[in-house]
Image (cartoon, rainbow, N blue to C red; front, side, top):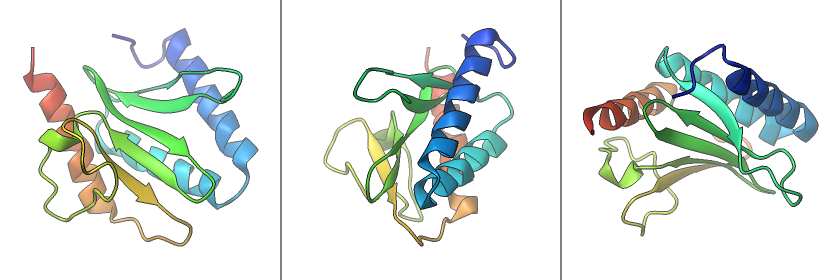
Length: 136
C-alpha cells in the first residue's frame, strides 16, 4: 500500500493539481471540491493518478484505502465519481445517479451548477473505506 507522503503519492497529487489547473473551468472547480471532500472524509485516504495514456495525458484521479474507494473523471458535461464497490454500499440519500445497472460499480455525475450534499458524500466515502477494510 502506498503511504501518504511517498514519492508516488506526491507525484499523483501534483498530477491531479495540474489536471485541475488545466481544466480551468467549472469541471476543475468541481473536481477540486470533490477531491477536498474525499480527503476530509478519512485521514488515511491516498490519492494517485492512474491510467495515464496519450488519449488521457492527465490520467484519472484515484482515491484509495485498502483498495480503490473511488475515481474522479472529467467529461465535457460532467465530473464523475465512480465508486469501485458502489453496488455494495447503502445509499440512503440517493447520491448514485449513474452506472446503476452494474453489479459492482456505482457513480455520481455532477453537472455544472449542481449542489453537492457534502454530509451524504462523506458518509458514502467512509462507508466505502469501511467496506474495503472489512474484507480480507
